[in-house]
Amino acid sequence: MTTLESSALLRVESVVRRFGGLVAVDNVSFDIPRGQVVGLIGPNGAGKSTMFDLITGVRPVSAGEIHFDGRHVTREPTHTRSPRGMSRTFQIVRLFPGLNVLENVLLGLHPKFPDGIWRSLLAGRARVRQEKAGRARAMDLLQFVGLADRARDRIGDLTLGQQRLIDVARALASDPTLLMLDEPAAGLNDAETDNLAQMLSGLRKGGLSMLIVEHDVDFIMNACDKIVVMDRGVKIADDVPAKVRADESVIAAYIGRRAVHAAH
Amino acid sequence: MSAVIAPPRQASIYPALAVLVVGAGLPYLLHGGFQLRLAMLVWIYAILCMGFNLLYGYAGQISLGQQTFFAIGAYGFALLQIKAHWPAPLAFVASLAICAAVALALGVPLLRLRSHYLAMATLAFALIFFGVTTRWIDFTGGSTGLSVPPLKFGGARLGRMSIYYLVLALAGAALLLHDFVARGAVGRALQAIRDDETGAAALGVDVTRYKLRIFVLAAVFAGVAGVAFTIVSLRVDPSMSEFHVLVTILTIAVVGGLGSRFGAILGAAVVMILPQTLVQFGELETLIYGVFIVVFLVFLPNGLAGLLDRDNWRGVIAFAKARGGGA
Image 1: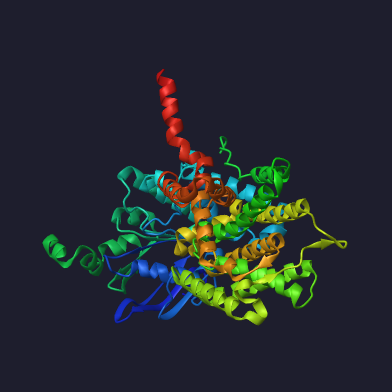
Image 2: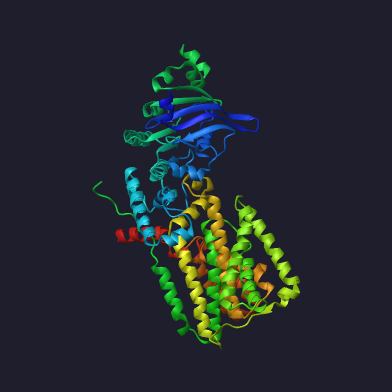
């Protein structure tokens, strides 16, 4: 038990988040072991996206602790968590429409560039080299997601599926140790979903730890080593996919009690 | 990965250098003191608007007090020479430091907030400053203002041409810094903040700090413009911080194109020069000018700089190619 805990990349401990009287996340604990892919599922309003926001620091926790890579990050702001190796995509794609595709991916490399105007100026030729290396890396990532030919295009000219791939490429740019994907398959057609699943399985083989929130059950069962299930803010299951799939309380929460009765 | 596609290069510095070469040659194409003065005014407003462009066009933070920093730079430069008898170069540096300090004091509490708070607070600050400069007559000279001693070098007063090149040097420094920010990682971070603060923070951009940095830089740009204006006009008065200066800044931004590399210079050239050529229409001047601005808003939403952007011509290019291919 202790060895497993110490090797966990992310540890969420008794985390609570209240919005006024509503408890969106109620005393939830789980961890992501290094190199594993963890799915976070649950019906609408279960608190999955809130959990994501708490882990990345977009919203503060009301109580509880978050440890990432052996460090207590509960009180850290968002912008210092991501340079530690935590990288995320958003449920509603949040690319920057005023920048082209390549520039969006380059922003994923932001922590690698000198911070601020003075430091950029003082970096001199090193900055030129960094910019060049950054552009090459961004291009490699675009090639990885199959969109290298769209590098100069505006975000608005891409389909939703392509935008999601750009979002993933941008999240990968910073060489994260934990990739967090918030409903990556939402709004994608079957071909695009297969394409995404293949890409994620490639990253999984490469040893990248991931946390995936997803509604598509088949997608998540195949993609994950273990699955955490939430319902109305509470964790109701935390196990390998096969066991979660057979869990009565999960089926009840996820499919609805009537459906369970109908199946019996 | 054998067939690696080369990434698009970073935008180059050469267009900015070309603008400066044109600026350096300009005095030889112009006739008389009036035209040279007008050219200097174009550069001064270009400096002022480049700061505004970084702040609003790139970072999306609207300040309605840039004209006040313009006046603070000018008053600082004037008063430090007149009252404290500081040499001009020292007064110049100190007045920029004052602009930066005031911006920092305003920005620290304000820039943690989103949306319109900055606009409201800078507007209130502008009104207070204007009130003080008009009424504190002993110190600021009231609405008549102060006259500033002309710049001297080795005991001799600087000539018209020297002053032009001094203004051009200031504009050149501003242009190169503006371009450096616009082309690089800092400009990307600013645009990310403009488009989506939460998204930018998730990628490691320290949103509050970047907003503060650029607010201070824009104030310093305005201060440089204010000093340059004082060097040319040899006087400061409260009208520098009046509302019409702000309107001019906004007009230049719209005509030139917000969030573009050369919009501030193109806009300043048109907005400064056009009214002079419209004087011949007498009473119709304002009307023609107004119609002109409306036409700009309707047909060139990205301003003059939009005409330089290849992206905006894609439709035309595709159409031409289709016609060419069909023939």
